[in-house]
Each structure stands twice: as structure tokens, then as C-alpha cells.
Picture (cartoon, rainbow, N blue to C red):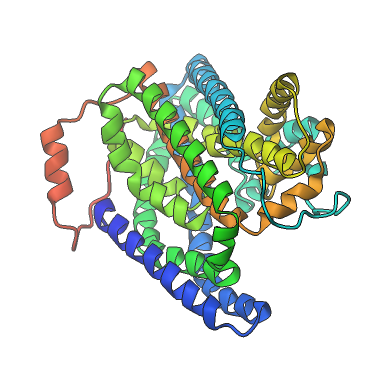
Length: 435
């Protein structure tokens, strides 16, 4: 299914989800009944996300091994990794800084007009899961099959780097056959991705309808100032990311945005980065990025380049301070930024990662963790913005690193336009991987 048609269907599903969800919330007799109705919508979303999770592990492993086997040089892997991490750190710092700036300018927590949770109220967020020792240990798999079963992208990446480089150093016929097999597996998995993405509009409808059924549109009005302020901050971050991409990619950054608009819409609607990964990888390869770069940088970005989550952590921390009228000096805010810069790098694999990071940092600055209970009701709608920004940030980061590596194949714009116009029915072609 072509991305432009899929984008249109997802947009329609998003609108229908809002309408149906609002109707269900209005006519539900009680919050418990609304929650029960939402659980049936959740079936659609769960099926879609399960199908996505089904293909992530084999796709990540096959693309990484095929790409790294072609490199055959650990120095190349190290160079690409260093460039990617350098970009990730810079993007994370800008995201955190923008969160501080806009939270101070817009004051989303001031004069809320709603009862504040008691300072001692527990949030039940597992902040103990966030520590550097466990994160570093968790990066390295003890069992690759266990890592694949749990879709631990970072662990799969580590094993695939060793496996791919080892395979690249073997020059016998068996090794070459195995590399060819991996390349064919990638083609098959991309075709499976195409089939799974046909179910995306249904999954999007279920996610949106379920969220609106449970929370209603009234919750959005109560916390409208917070939502608007946060999305204004996200818009500013988008401008910064696109400007940085333009500085490296030139006008091609706009062609990249056009290609990834479909995955971004899926991410926004489902509030799940996992739901985007396979299609985002496919679209980046259509942009011309060689498979060896996409397959390495994109999984790395899913763990270390969460721009939307970064801006949310500083924004949410200051929101709590403003809600409880606890002033923070400029020095304290800068210190908080640096603490978040370090602590946020261990959030891969932590459930509700952004909230956990904020909950862990708040007590360090005398701020009540209970303040996060204010945003839990609308966290899904905040998460939609965080997710789509993470997708955009990783797409631009992968393209920038590929540009620095000279790993983007030139594409004739005229041919790209013709491809967009081709009919989609009965199209059984599989996108070819860049060598």
C-alpha cells in the first residue's frame, strides 16, 4: 500500500476515532462503563501493535547483519556510531533546553484551577528501574533468543554487530550464501511490513477511540493550557530539528519529511514508537540511505535519541514546580537540565520512561512526585506529541549521519514523482535495499 493512500486512511481513522470516542464517552453511564467500552476498542490497537512487534526483531537483526557484513570493518562501525551519538547528545541538549525555555515563558502550571494532589501521595512509578548500573548491564544480552522474544532492540543491536562483523570477515562460499540469505530475509520482512501496515488505520481508530472514550474531551479542556503549551514547545523543537537537517541535507530535508509523514501520523495516533519502526526504515531507504547506515543508526536512535521525551522531562518538571508554586532559581534549572541529560540515557526499556525519569529527578530539587498525578489523565495525548517528535528526530538523525558518511544514493526527483503517481492496486514489488 502506497504511503500517501495509507496516510489518508489513517487521517480518516483518526477523525472517526475522535467522533466515536466522544459519543461513547457521552452516552456511557459511568466511568467504569466507559472504561469497559474502551477495552473493546483496545483489542484493535493491541492486535496491530502485536503484529508490529512480531516483525521488529527479525527485521532489526536481518538488516543489521546484512549491512554490517558488507562493511567488514569495525572502524567503520565505530565511526558511524560516534557520529550518531554526537548528534544524539546535541539534539538531546537542545530538546531539554527548549523544554526549560518554553515552560518558563508559557507557565503552564500557574493558576491551574484544579485541586492539587497531596504532596505525600504515591504515583506508583517504578523509579528504581532507572539507574546507570542496571542500564549498562541490560544493554548486553545473555540470550539472543530471549532478547528477540522481548523485542530488546539495543540487545539485538549488540549481538547483530558481533555477528555481522564476524560474518563480514569470513570469505568462504558458505558465509557469502548466509549474507545473501539475510538480504533476502530483509526483502521478505519489508513485504510482511507492507501487509501489517494495511491494518494501521484500524489500529489507529481503536487507539484514539479508546483514549477519548475513557478520558473524554472535557479532560482536554481542563488541561488545555498545558497541552497547548507543550505542543507549542514541540513545534519549536520541530523547527530546530528541521533547520539542523536543512543545514546538512539542504532541500532534501523536505523530501525526507514528505516520505516519513505517514509513519509520523501512525506514531502520533498510536502513541507508540514501535508501531513506526518497520515502515520508517523502509521510507528511509526510499530516501536513498544505504542499508548499512539505516540498520545501525535507527535502532541506536530508538534507545538514545528520544527528542520528544527529552523536551517533556524538563517541561513536566517545571510544570509541577509551577503548580505547587515552588520557585526554582536559574542555577537550579540548569542543574536539573544536566541531571536529566545524564539520567535520561538509561530510559530504554523502562515502562512510561519519560514519567519515570521526571519522578526520579523531582525529589532532588524539593519538588513533590505527586504532581505527576495531575498529568496522568492526559498523558496519552502528551505521549502522542512525544512519539511523533521522536520519529521525526530519528529520521533526521539517520539521514544526517548517512550524509556525513556519503551513504545517500542520488535519486532523480522526476523518477520519484513518477513513482508516487503509480497505481497501488496489485503492486507486489518489494523496495530494493541499497547496497
